Image (cartoon, rainbow, N blue to C red; front, side):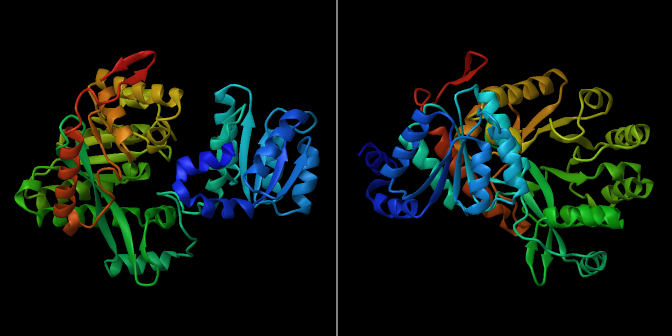
Length: 437
């Protein structure tokens, strides 16, 4: 009865539809403690789940997984013989196609590490819960099994593309810039746009760079692609109303491009020829790849800064970004990777990392930009921490230039609504045991 009341609370009286979906699940419960195993099975039965099988340890569970196609495996981490961590690896080797829900009475940091391990082994993770488990938490996570939507920024399907396809795309101007707004967290005003390449493919539609950037790197197309995006981005922004003429334009360059003398000469010359409105150009250096020739990179970035460009270190905190490079290279902006922003709401350690990045930027006299802001809570957290700018779906998804005026009007309306919240209703933010407003 308690489980039913939880469903009504979360989903209203549409809970019957929810119950029907849960009823069809096939669940394996892997728990070495007999009392907790029985208690968990009873909770699942109350949810209407009929096909439930128990396992006392990882070895027994693996045998059952090989024999049966389970929808969900609920797995304890600390078990004799084969523990939960080893079971996760073996499930990946068996190409397990279902979902996994982790349980543990140990510290939260272990659960987070196990969650990351599941992700690395490409198993669908629906939750990581501390014991004792609450009925509401159990049903909420079980329902995530039915959510099959791909995450933003991940490949949605596999496309076989070739170097010849890239040649044709560049020749036929199928590569186009989309623009994602960057706004001030202090006042909501537009700060600039990041230009993001999209491939307008005649067969597959709009393709994101995850599907072709690696190919462009390997086939030697990056210089031509970067030149095209630079020209097209400036040209598109120059067609917009004058109120957008003074905004910043950020363009991505691969670390490999820092060793290309042709590319740096092209960008400097193109900036003088095309940039009529003298927009401030920011070169974003992604840290997903290592900078092979640090001396050459330092020379090129210093030259860009000398000619008035801003330089941003992108995806800070992951990849090959280091404190040493941050101190040596002439960066003017620090972009906090979206993976930290996504987790900071629910993970105190990640929130501390974000706070530290913002404080580091301030002390180094850099502007901080948070990527991947998707909701009101993230916005308020970042604002309270003193982050300078943000971008993400909360403000605007990447869009063609012609949609910018309408989207910015929509953002201003949203921001006005945010500002109508009274100070008493604004939630305080706890960081390192202290509160910021």
